[in-house]
Length: 262
Image (cartoon, rainbow, N blue to C red; front, top):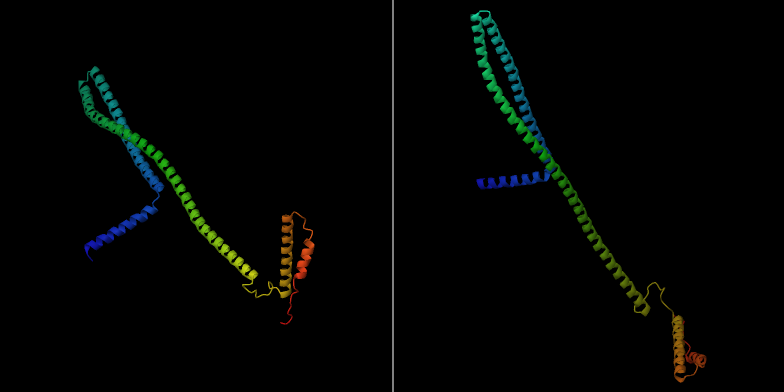
């Protein structure tokens, strides 16, 4: 396998891994972890300040003891000299001189530790201010992220509802179209049955010859009545002859010929 293919496979693997990590990463957890690390660093700085302060205090105690011992040798030398013991006075002053060298070294170390303590204390205060500012910003970002996440979920929910309502709307439209088609088909069948173009296989809607002839006669009588009324309106008279006309129309109608043979 060539190096180019290996590089491409490595790039694809890293990109997919990065994408998976990005989906799994929660910014709120990352911020909390960073804040915890800053608190640990601040705690270390504070422990350093405490250690330096302890060392400075220890030197301060040693320095105080040496200074007291030096003052004691000076008093002893003064007393020895007052008693005429110059040799004892010289020995006391010699010891005081040796202590003074130690006192000078301790004072130098004490000043160095004091300066280091001040620097660490200032650094601790600055780090504390940064940690406090980060905590405030962290909580703000977490609240904003949580709100954005909630808004996204609500928007996705509305989007899902809209898609479902769209499907429901299509289903309703198909149902309405099918219902209208069925109604139109039923109306067409009724018209065909009424006109006789389509036989009713059940026999329920079929009329025999007598019933058809009676309906035709009734229809003719209605026409004669309407004709008599129109004549009376044109002549300005009353349709007094309507019953006679009707009766005459009925008499003029030949009796129906009924075929009883099937």
